[in-house]
Structure formats: C-alpha cells, structure tokens
Length: 301
Image (cartoon, rainbow, N blue to C red; front, side, top):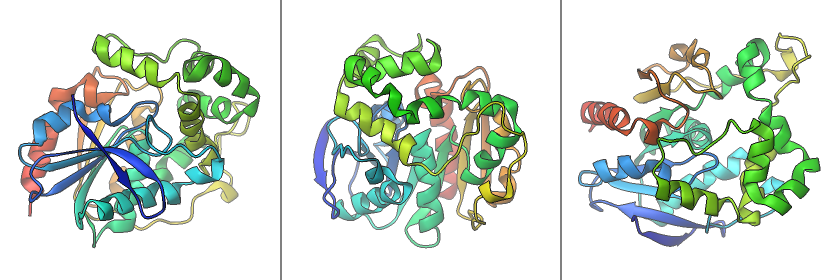
C-alpha cells in the first residue's frame, strides 16, 4: 500500500500525496483522471520508484484532498496551478509531468505552461490535446456520441441522484451501465473505488471538473461543423520530449484524437496499445511501463 502525506499548497488547498523514491533523483508527477485516484499509477510507481522520485496526488475534489464545492474552484487554471504549487511545496524545481484522462488534460496545460523552464518532458495517456478534441467533438460523430456524458454531468437536475446514490448513481445513468470497474481491475481496487464514490462531497468535486471546463459538447442534432466562435485561440506547439500512449479500444476517446497531433507536438513518441480500453495505466501496465522505460532512458538529461 502506498503511503500518503498531507501537503498544504500556497493557495490553501491540501492534497494527499504519494511521494516515493530517492529525493535526489529526477522527479515525476503523476496526475490521475476521473473517477479514480493516485492509485491509477500504482504499477508505474512500483516500477519506477527505485530510479525516480515519484509524486502522485489525489487531486483537488478527490478522496481526502480538499473538496471545495463551488464550481469556480475547478477551472483549468486552478487545477494546473495546483501542480506547480505542489512541486513548490515539495521542493521540486524541474520535473516530468505524466497524466491520464482528466489528469492528462491538466498535464497538457502544465507542459505547455512550463516547457522551457520547469517541465522537462511529458507523458500523456489517453487524454486528447485540447485543440484536437475541440475540433473532433464537433466534426466526428463517434466522439460526439461518446462525449454526451459531459452534458449529463453538467446537468444540475441530476444532483439529487448524486446526493441519494453517490457518484455510482450518476455513472450508471450517464453511461447506461457501460462504465465500470471491469475484470482487469483487482477486486481490492474495485472495492476501494466503489467506497470512494460514496463520498458525496468528493462526487460533486469530481463533477465540478466537468462543470468548470470551458469545453463545449454539442448535442447530437447540432451541425457537424465547428463554428468559428467555438475554436480555441492558437496554442504554441509543445516542443519538449513527449510520449503519447493511446489505448485503441477506448469507448470515450477514439483514436481519431491522434490525427494531426504531430503538428502540435514537435518531439513526439507515439505508442498505440491495441485491445485495451480507456484505463491503460492499469489495464496494460506492462506495455505502459516498457514505453516509459524507453522514453525516460532516451530523454534523461
């Protein structure tokens, strides 16, 4: 069991954090996605913590970490800021950022904000680049259909469902039973996750990641062409070494999210993982570990 410590950030947010590995080694900060925890990265931390300082928080809104209940507390700038403030609190200047799902979305932001200064390299697992996703959700029917759960998560008419049944009630409604803790998850991990989902404050904290996001998901009957006023402002290319790991059987994020990514990431290594669903860090840990080994060895300063 990975031990956690409580870390207070300069903005007043407190995070429960795993911090394993040699303190004088290069640091890696791991960001989990929805609706998990630091334990998303259990296999990678066990594999890498003999060589790297592995830091994995339960991000704001999750488990025992601070769970403000207002939507405004979950805007992307605050979530990105938490990562840099966590590094500051732990005395880490330069680090590798790793993220999956929502953690990957924040990792894109951290990498873009910190490239050339604090971020040495990035590893992104099944998390679309913000520019590519914004386009795809308009133009690609599969992505739009797969993203309709955003609309359910944002609908406050569902709040009583969460109050009465926890996050599991919302997941069952939004995904019609298709979202699960599948057979590749260890029984003890499944039991812990189901317990975590019972915390009502955490449930609303997690949903607020969706409610505070500027991402717009159109309805199924809106035109399949992105309006000019929905396009993101231009973002600079990501130029630091970046490993993108993409599981190809992800029902939420089809592989078309990779189209054009090489134009936005100029030093990219892409590893496709066939016959694997969304939760690639623990569904295919050996593949992820091997890909990270090769990438980290090649890019170690």
